[in-house]
Length: 139
Image 1 (cartoon, rainbow, N blue to C red):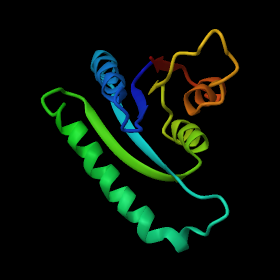
Image 2 (tube, one colour; image 1 turned 180 degrees about the vertical axis):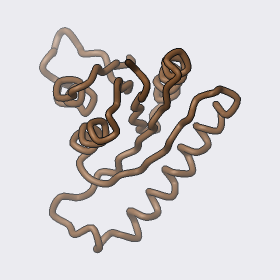
Image 3 (tube, rainbow, N blue to C red; image 1 turned 90 degrees about the vertical axis):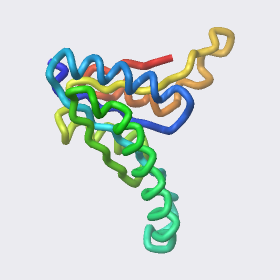
Image 4 (cartoon, rainbow, N blue to C red; image 1 turned 45 degrees about the horizontal axis):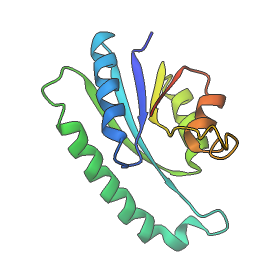
């Protein structure tokens, strides 16, 4: 059921909890983890114009993701790391479908009940609503 768990990471303070949960689930189901970071690209600017900048961000992200994965090297779970470019919500959803993810685990925020409509347009809520597989939002 959860043989492939996708964990989009944004390098915020809460990302490690999502990865911990993913490792436990993947280990239980004898599955793998895809750790994904999406670098948002500017819509009206050609990629080639900022390619050097994007490449630097990609190197930094890969280095950080490999360090995160190394912390679990004693756990019998494979953690694949990938960096993509584009719209974060769309790329997460496309990647999940392409990799046939059984579960997406990602950070989220608590919705303020006094202003419930603010914050519902976040990446995590878009992914949760549009994903074809189950999504666990870690708050």
